[in-house]
Length: 207
Image 1 (tube, rainbow, N blue to C red):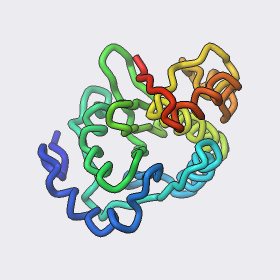
Image 2: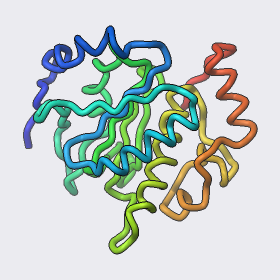
Image 3: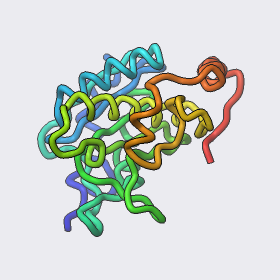
Image 4: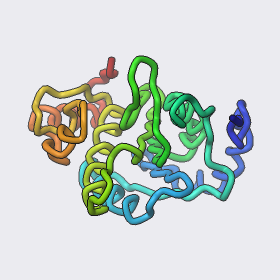
C-alpha cells in the first residue's frame, strides 16, 4: 500500500491547475477528471450526458501521469471514496464542481462497494466504473450506466436527495438492474427542485 502520489497535504496538485484557473474557472463549470486507464470513449459519453442534464460547461481534465490522487488501498483492492474526494478538493479552485472517474472499486463504511459518492458541502464527487459492466456486455451499456451514475452524483452536489421514483435518475441504485431501469433524466419534481437550487432559491444538503 502506498499513499497518494500527491502527499497527504495535496500541495503538489495546485501548480498543475494554476494556469487553468484563469482560463476555465467560471461559475458553474464542471471538471470531469478520469483516472489513468479509464476508457476515454466512456468519458466522452458521460461528458455529453452531463452537459445535457445540467446545461453547464463540462471540461475533461487529464492529469499529468502520476498526478492522479491515489487513496490507500483497502480490502478487495478497493479505495476509500471519501479519501479520493478529499484529494480532489483543490480542483475547486478552478471549477465549481468536480467529478473524478476511476476504474478501481470504491469503498464506503458500512457497505461492500459504492457506484459513487458525493460530499455536497465540497461539491466534489467520485464514481467508479468497476461494477458498471458485466463480462461480455457491449461497452455502450457501461457508458449508459456511467452517465446515469455521473448525473446522480452531481445531482447530489447541487443538493438533490434520493428520489422514490424508480425512473428518476436520482433513485438510489441497489444494483445494476436499478440503474438499467431508471432513466438518465430527472423526474418532474427533482427537475423543478434542481432549477430552484441552481437559481439559489434555497439550499438543501443531502443526508
